[in-house]
Image (cartoon, rainbow, N blue to C red; front, side, top):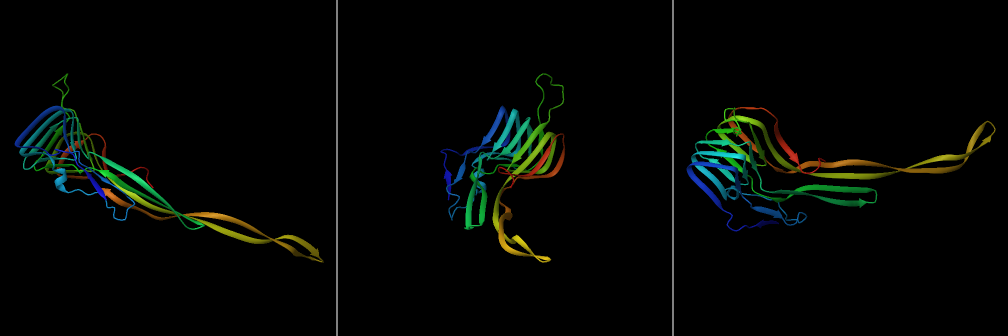
Length: 268
């Protein structure tokens, strides 16, 4: 079963036509959390959220949002949206991420026969917060701000990070981006089978000569075992998708571009 953890007065809304914010750190955080009570129970289901769970914490503007954060802008399991206009962010670090993700690994060992050992390894998401949404109906402009010592220098570049969340820009993404990372999470399931094979070979341990030939008068049996390893199953059993959808990208990424999925713990 999935157990919701309630937080009193969790709802938070900032809604307007044009919104401007300036602070060292701008945080839009939804602390909602669900846990799986018993992963081995027959009726245990993966943790799921609806869109309304994310929108319990919301910053929404009809026309425009301008945010200047000298340290970072973090949209955490929340919604940050501009319905028809532009989002402008001046910050060295922009994060769109989940408030909490906890994974675990369940290992079951079976022995259906004395010579067969089966290991079932299952990764699963144990605790989870809602997916974050960053939605821009117009254009998304981003840069890292300027140096406090010299206002004449060009703006710094910014790091844009999307982890197991959604970034959707219907217009253009433009600006100075040092690195862009958009990563989802996958969990895996694997079944390994180890089989012991028994071998026997009968051989002559003593011979005697009779005339021109030798005959065997005693036999022995040599016995030994070998072990084989088989992978009966190795597949993805769960995924937290990372969506990064830009209709009209118009920016140069100066550093590392990283996309795809990461797995919990070690790869099988």
